[in-house]
Image 1 (cartoon, one colour):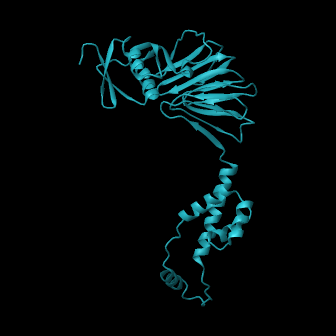
Image 2: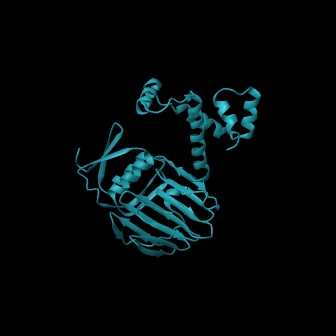
Image 3: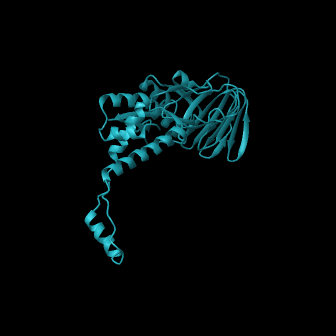
Amino acid sequence: MKNEKEILKWLNNELSSQEIEDLKQSEDLQTLEKIAHYASQLEAPKVDAHAALEAFKARNHSKKKTKVRTLNFKTFYRVAAVLAVMLTSAYFMFFNNITSFETQIAQTKSVTLPDNSEVILNSASKLSFNEKKWADKRALTLEGEAFFKVQKGQTFSVNTTAGVVTVLGTQFNVKERKNYFEVNCYEGLVSVTYNNETIKLPPGKTFRVINGIIENVEDFNVQNPSWIQQESSFNKIPLDQVIAELERQYDIKIKVEGVDTSKLFTGSFTHTDKEIALQAVTIPLKLSYKIQGKTIIFYNYGVK
């Protein structure tokens, strides 16, 4: 960073108005504001100068007296603050280039990557990647669910806690939730690595793992996942996973009373009408629901 002396004077309020304007023109204003903020958080340690001097004399009583020069602690710590912030700024500028995108409950987001690949994040999901290294390595980390339209080029990898998805240029969906991992290929060829084994998925194929068990899944014939059209679809999925998706799409809390959440559900629910969505899930499974405050309770027919 340039103009270190001027920055120090700026922190000490020793610059004129014109000098401050000149400094802002020569340095990034946002960086200067960060420096001022971090410097204001640093507090010089409290030092008992008299006690320290006496201790020093006691350790060196046999040595000749030397001339003592008073140190300006205020200036010293301001210089230290500037240096510390300069090092921090340099780190974030040159080393920490992680870019992240995140969605909240009942929210989706479209993202365009540096190579013009497109990603649509489903609710409660997070995507991150190193922008500085992107040209050499197209690698991302995903928490949650996302649909990808990847531009052709070098290998494109999506890393999750459950497995790694690798492609060259294709369209696919990755869903990684608690006890659930699923990859759907819509175009091209997708490579999925799970437990050190690699599976190739052509269009219409799905790789699914529920509670650590690889499932056999029927082929599909659609162009993209239903959630992009504001509808969640399921094919023989445990009820607890369906409930979790309802909670993510509607920002609600669902509890069950005497209901087997391992029973399988095949069907779908809309993201635009909560009442219809709840009925779409409960009726096929012969369940009822009641509302208690902000909580929705699922129970079996005939039980109040």
